[in-house]
Image (cartoon, rainbow over all chains, first blue to last red; front, side, top):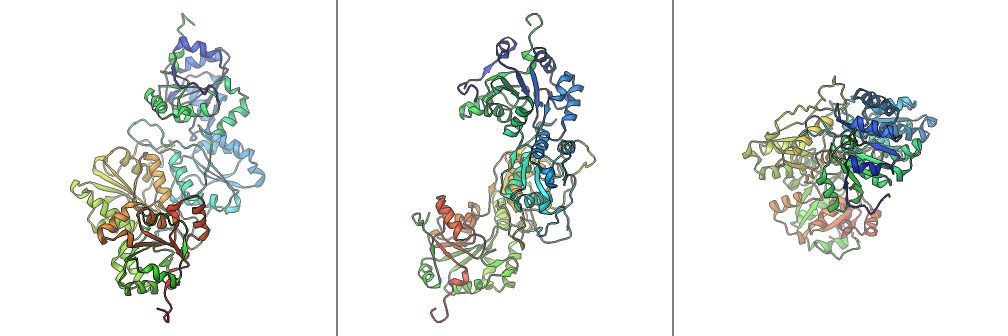
Length: 318
Length: 318
């Protein structure tokens, strides 16, 4: 782990950041709360990205949102005014899931993936020609059956034909899907169980409204089948392996910048990267302090800043 | 806790059980795997109950299944040939939930209960005149909305009118119900969050089929709302409090008999009761040994027996 003894988070501004910058070759950015907020660009962030690109830094965008494919994210970045160089450097759990399944050799076995997930995973599986089924509305069958429990499950595919179950956010999640996923996983030890991410909730336009993300859905399937999934999203390792594999980064000279201590900062700390929290999204200085009090050093960043825009040098000093 | 030093489980038969019997006034029985198996009576169990009733023992039946009301269980016991005296002595999580809500004073506040649950809870809430809503099919609205997340929730009742959320097994559970439950709980600190039980799966006619019980549904809601529920079923305390309140038992002279170490035996151990595992249902001697190896003494019974029928004295020796 890089800098394991750094326990105080240091606030940086455009001036002090210039000294940090010379030790970093690659920057990995979280998206929501860092590059954008919902559908709006985060003011100043495109300028900061340009500043780093001018210095020949490698930029990777790593989101935990698996509902959209990398192609959709690339379009969004362009629309919000980001440098076109970013468009091929987006990583999301959907891409990592597809890559993981592809490398597991699932295509050679002719087995399919049972998918609880959204368009992002569908698109990435399509990209690699991996067969899947299960997404979309799945009405509870036998609604006329007055017995409280569903004893006889009508599986869409036989247990032996399902090589993996992928669970992520899907608004059509229901008891039937829960039961199918649990049975495919529990009845075949060799069936791979992958979760896109385990975020409990996702941010929305109304801060009071709880929008359950993939976490609760994964928790339900895990509880029913009694097996732990491979979790792909931050702070877990598959996304890191994917990045290493594709960009051959040097962790000592790579910085993870995000707005969450429990996903972004922890991802960086757990994989030996330098870390920075920006206060333009979810977590604030109080959260850093809480993590220090609780001795959760894996969630205390090395640096923090108000936002990316605050790190862009003034023209006169640049 | 009764007999904290008893770490070895002792096998009993009809002869040795006679010596245990004289120290016990009240027996609490689990139902499935003990008194019946699915829809069939457990052979010998009705005779054992008659034997205890003849000795003037108090008999209580405590199930973790909240899908049926106590009245339905009473009918089932009668149909399977059990002594009619049992019929008023059935306790299930549905009854405990209704009692808990009633004693919380929810009726005086004119607030309602948002219910993810089955007929058992419905009947018990009706018995006590507690208002509820939410059960049954709840189609995801705005299926034409192409946005992956549901941002604007259409709540059936306003947050301020919901005094409690009760979560148990319901085959119509879906993402919409998850989101509603999470919002009622998270948006009002005073909203009571109760889970009927947290069994991961329930037994069914096909041992290979995983039938998710309330546990996965509770896990999903808990993950989304970030609050822990009051869990009513075994091994938790509300069911014990309910029994103490109604029968005024002496824990030292009460024995819990069930087929599961993690619910029945743990319930007994955690509340200072004597304990016995019967091997006619879920857990076996290997499970007791595993618990001993893992030093989970709270899940090691004081006694075990093949089944209740094995404890009935032969006519000639009785």
